[in-house]
Length: 211
View 1 (cartoon, rainbow, N blue to C red):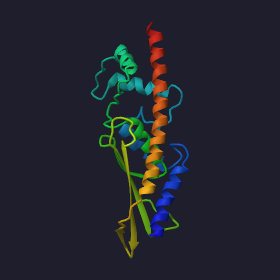
View 2: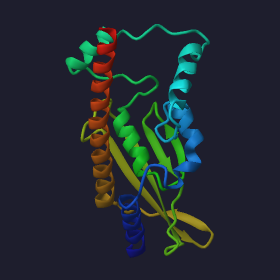
View 3: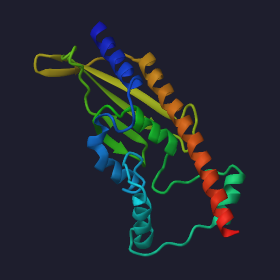
View 4: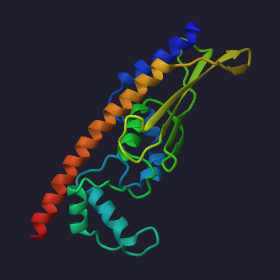
């Protein structure tokens, strides 16, 4: 029991002390992220100055079906923003800020499953070298289209090795799961503030250009 709790605490501490979205093992998942967000919108891919614009221009010109899409309705976008309307992200069935925050929190671990439509993320089994006979897995499920405190669920599952077999430990990690949830909400709130600020600036710039 003590070993299992120690591994759970290790997971929380290592995540809390993580640095930068691309400093951990997430680099190996870059191509997976491209499939989730699209290459140009992958928040974890670094573009040199001007490269992202070129990438987006190519996407808009061709589109997934090779047809140029309809232009964005600027007036409708501005009115929707002013009225506090929800921003809809193509291809995302869950809140993007909660999703991106969940990805960032799990940056130090290899990801086994990523499903943006279902809002589900699962790490591979995580083993602390100090406790080689224990392993844990973190599962995160974003369940809301809006940024809500109950919009994300975190589950930690641990197993113990006996001989050559791994057996599930029926232990709860409520405190650890709560800590990870709060970390995700904290980052999501920061992302939301940044995105709103950027959107407002982009809209003002667009209006000034049109005027």
